[in-house]
Amino acid sequence: MKQIVGTALLILTGFVSLTSFRAQQGEKDYSSCLKKVQKKFGAETKTCPASSKPYKVWFVNDCNDTLAVKLAVQEKSKHWRTFTRLQLLPGDTISGYACNSTGKYLYYAKQYADNSVELPSDEEIDSSNIH
Image (cartoon, rainbow, N blue to C red; front, side, top):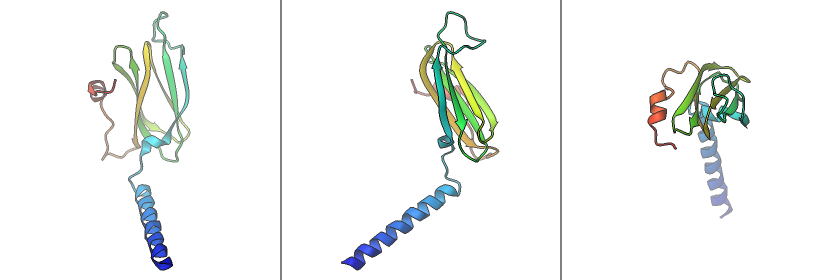
């Protein structure tokens, strides 16, 4: 019985190691590299009218990889205001805002210069059913 349990544990450990190796070899979710560092209602922006209640959010690239990032912040009209950085270096920050925000945001990331993956277009984000 001990031998069966030991063999099952060895197989399970090997599977976990293989899965971890695959993730490191190209199946990495680069969105997990973005860490929200601040959010603020009422943050001043030059493009919002004085009567609006802007919402601003900041993310930092917390990985050692250079990223291409698209950040979207939703207006009360359900339109997504988008911000793109095609070369976000490790430790760099991206921010986005909405003048009359719902407080919702989305972000997408890929490894910089990975031409096999495309960030969604503004139209794709706006036409999504994410409300």
